[in-house]
Length: 140
Image (cartoon, rainbow, N blue to C red; front, side):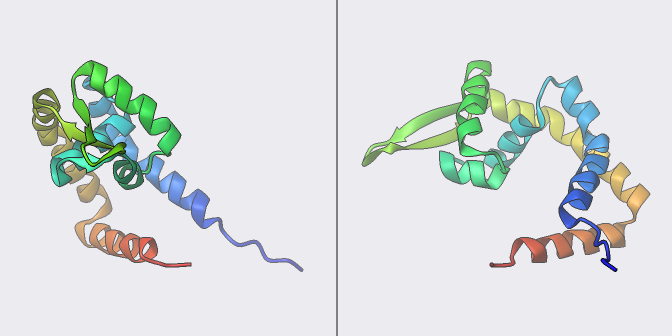
């Protein structure tokens, strides 16, 4: 008799959706998509990044990244420049407007995080983050 194993990937997606319910209203209020916020947050934390590295960190497929960055550049949140010694490489940076967006949103996003932590529990959240970090570090 076959046993049915829970789907780790489905559980992770459903947990992500549950977590995003705390953050999505703030993103909608500021007119940002989840992808745009991830890019703004990563660039604020890391500084200028090569486009492919940014795509990896933001978990955005590289073909999609070009369109997302084009829209963000039109909106004035990011800029792009080619590397002088290798014209194939594109560096992405946060503009002053992108920085202002991060600063305007960081307070409400922190409040959302605090609400999530209050509902889930600080210890459980820290344990979950630790376990997810270990899972990300697995090599196949």
